[in-house]
Image (cartoon, rainbow, N blue to C red; front, side, top):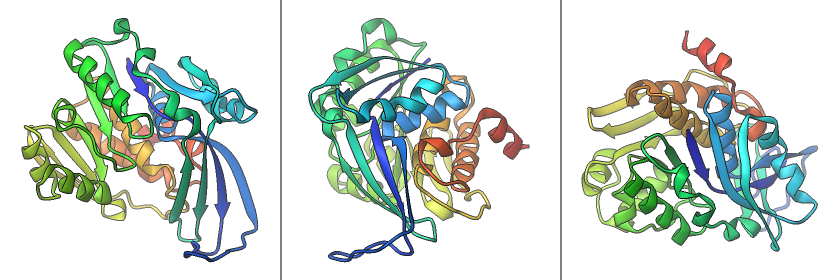
Length: 294
């Protein structure tokens, strides 16, 4: 079972000829509205790849909440631990250019009302994989990591967006997933080089995965270094690819795949995600990932 503690947003996605610079207005022809939030995206990716998922987080008591929850409701996951807050539902404005690159602004809103106590002790234990990101309150993220470690759960953290976290919490992880920018931020925060090997060594042997976009990934694991090229695809929209990778990686680990195989599966799933527009709606199914693997 996977317990996800994280964010739920409603995404406003603007298709533009190019990404705006500071002070620039760029006119586009279309805009779509889709559920998002790193926590929700990763939960949907894991559930679509067959994982049993329990989600804890918060949305507002406003008109945006139901749209933000729409795709989570349509997957086979338990969202009964999502609370309703007085704050507005989290919202993101996502600009995507013709090359599939994106620029994102987020209003956290109700996500800052999520509390680690929404995850009961009975959900934690050796049978559970806990998946977290950095769009919920830092103190609650740290607290849940420490509770999960004490209970013997597997813990996967996507340090995104990059933000400081207590080094004791970081050292309690089983798997840390970052992109290049997040790796550089973390390296400055914990005073080491920004390679997967250096970060892993600094954190006492935590498995560290650095996603490299079109260059694939590098990882430092208990079994040594791993490097994988990106899936050979024509990217349409890279929004959500990192969340797809992390969700599918967690699902694969939760059902017992070795880390190297789980990384390969997640890498191909992220590539599939880039071949379609959107965020949560672009997460591939188990059948689609299996077909890509074969």
